[in-house]
Length: 242
Image (cartoon, rainbow, N blue to C red; front, side, top):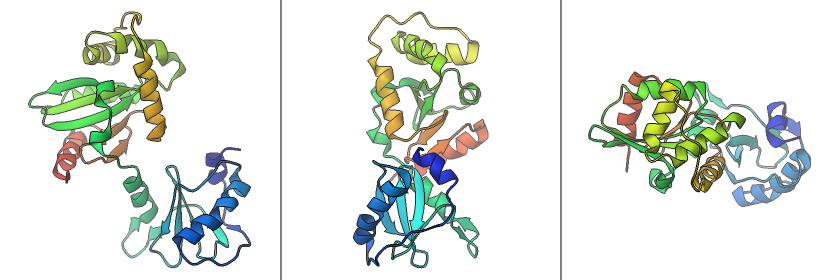
């Protein structure tokens, strides 16, 4: 079974193991445990003190597990701070999902400049995604933004349309024509390897659904937002650039 499926149904597990003392020791000790529990090739991408009792955070892709300093227990689920009334696990996942906006290969995206274009937004979208179409409608209400749309065909029926949009003389126009007006682009007659590059990029960024949005400060928002929320997120993202 794949790691995600196992994690979904995993309860707290007791695993006999020798005591360890620090993050490096925990990482070494947890390695064989993860392979034993979840299969060959599963490894920790990061190990750190969680700042909660004696728990250590184990990062695997975009998922988090927890263990104790002796690596005797492996735990899944959210850690909640009762006093502060916040979800520590969720906040940590949001931080881990952030990127450096300038590292995005923007040449692979359809670019649309509205107004002064000072604010920036990068989206990963499937042309046949219902909420991507709703997002496109909301973006029509937004001004003073540069939108980079990475065409990310995760639906089986979206491959040919995506290639057609990629080969269009004006990709942004072809994208909007399709998602807003259902006007299909001409059949692709160019090198469409860029679509495959976007698919690879999305997988590296652990994008599992569309739309997925990235703001100027690198923050990630999975899913659709109405225009009013988008305005606030764009302003916040721009203000938080360091």
